[in-house]
Length: 183
Image 1 (cartoon, rainbow, N blue to C red):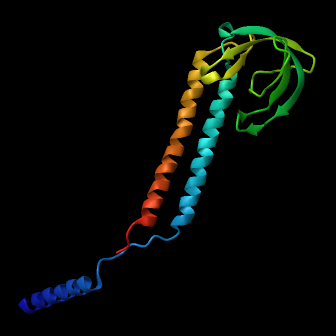
Image 2 (cartoon, helix red, strand yellow):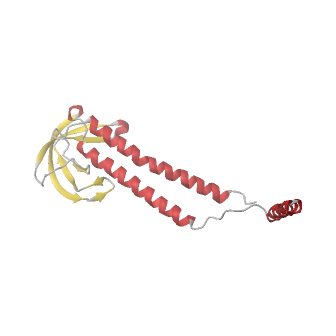
Image 3 (cartoon, rainbow, N blue to C red):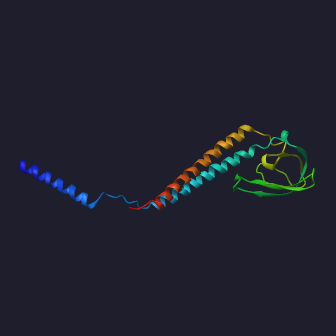
C-alpha cells in the first residue's frame, strides 16, 4: 500500500513538472471579430431607433408663439413630402418654402410637424423666435409649446445616446488590444 501511494505521488509530481515545462494554458478567441461587428451593428441600430423616436415625439411641440420677436403672415410657395424614415424621425412630413410678409423674403422650413395640410397659396400667422447664438426659429399659434413633450423626447434621446457611449467604450478596448505589447 505504501508503494502504491509513493507511485501516485511520483505520477502527480511528474505531471506538474510537465505542465510547468510547457507553460500555462492560453485561451484562444475564435470568431470574435464577427461577434464584435454584429454587436456594433446592433448597438447602432438600437441607437438610431431611439434617437429617431425622440425626434418623432419632439414634433408634437414647438417654439412658444408668445415669445416670438415679431409676427406676420406667411404664404406657402411650395411643399415637398419627405419620409417615412429620415434623420428627422419616423413618418411623413412636409418641408415647405414660405414667403414671409414682414421681409418679403422666402424661407425654407424643414421642421417636421410644423406643417400639416398646407398647400401652395395658403396663408397662416408665423412668429420669428430668436435663439441663442443668433439662431432663428419659427413658431405657429396652432402648434403650442409643450414642455412635458420636450422632456419626454429628451429622455428618449438620452437613452439613444447611451448605446453610442457603450460603442465608444468598445472601440477604446479594441484599440487597447491592438496596441498592447505582445510578450
